Image 1 (cartoon, rainbow, N blue to C red):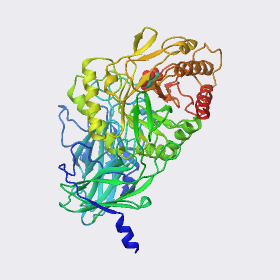
Image 2 (cartoon, rainbow, N blue to C red; image 1 turned 135 degrees about the vertical axis):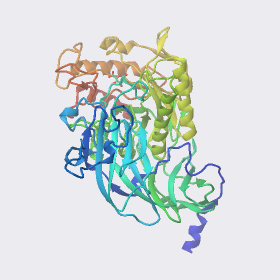
Image 3 (cartoon, rainbow, N blue to C red; image 1 turned 90 degrees about the horizontal axis):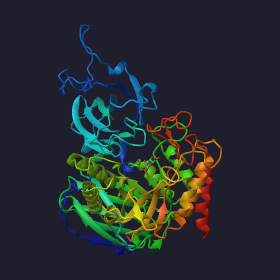
Image 4 (spheres, rainbow, N blue to C red; image 1 turned 45 degrees about the horizontal axis):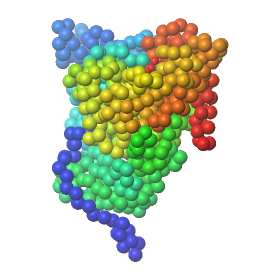
Length: 602
Ligand code: GCB
């Protein structure tokens, strides 16, 4: 009987589709690597600092084959080899180099990393070398051979290294270069520390030859009763079966692969994921040879005029912006515990929303935030004046966007993909960001598109949002520094806003600097009183904006920035945090907290 009743839940859907498993549109990244058999390559890596790139170029500045990636050793006493990883200094991976070694605090350039590891081949398996992120450019070599290059500091990448691994000892060398360049994304100018290094974890991931390479399992846009998606399987034969099972919903769908891919639709009424009830379902995707388990939440996000609706219900986004910088020790966040410190502060503040600025944060951050019920704005570092007319710059930005969406497309927490931050108005910029938005929608049309703008003009009665980018996005982000970069602290409350667009607006930044523990008059810069008065006056201003759908003030915690040299106040930190880097809460923290808690009472 039981078997029969289970069968009633099994639907067979045979949707033929034309794309291949290695869908060129996506970044071809293994999904949910937490559920994969992994060998960690974290820990101590040998390192050589190479500002002249001696290990890459010969003295004619040509890339040469005797570079440091060879990991050469002297064979006889007369040999001349002017480097040796075995006697070199070491760096921790994951981690930035700037906060690990005093000498590297300001360093921007090449550092070579080397790690030895043992490997035992298994039959019928593929092995990927997977980097969660390296800032900024990584050239990867395995056992002395170049296996690939990746550009962009905050997204994952992988290489199939099955044929390059040997039984026994292996070594991987990575040339990491964080030199800023005009054509890069971000460009040479950024208000955060250019932390270099293998900043996130590195793994060897083994999968069966025929393996689940990618999948998308989400509610259909605006529909709460239809779970829709696709599964891609590498090295599959046409007609191979794949099943998608959600045990708690008692649903199993079986479908057949065609050209390595299969679409599916499950009619189901899951309990919806929301900030107050961040429900996740175990989803098991299975083929004859492979299985991946993920925890997936189901929710919809749409707009209605100037409102944002989550699961059809108007939801005001009570947010805060966050940089992925660790509390207390500073430097890049490297552990789940460090993510949780920041997330718990945001919870205490009363937030239901996070703007993860200004680049994709780690998968751990997104997943922990999801478990805690935060709605997320996730963005790529198309920041300030990048080269909007440069095709390579566009390709780079689009690649980072693709990798961000490829990694996080199954996360219910992510509701907004942000294309850019504070970019100057121009035709090339409009087409650059419009193309990115189009790309994002083609990869994932279930979420909303946004961008943070600082280009508002003057209307009859105050500020007017009329940037042509407003047409392109679903939700308009506005960064506005009344009381800090213009106006005095008390002037903000009377500012009026109008918008040329009937769309939701998120005040994606407001804020001002304060040194924790510095007290004085509310008109004295850098005091907690000044920052607090600025928040109060901005809150009054925002309360009068009818089309506001949320806010994410700048910023949860003070963060390092080389634009902030003022001694005894900034000391290389942007002080706009509501909390100091040592975890001390400033007055404005409590003001924003009260505002958010009062909203809940209404
Ligand atoms: C901004 C930027 C942000 C800066 C902030 C500031 O508008 O978006 O990255 O850190 O202003 O503190 O000036």
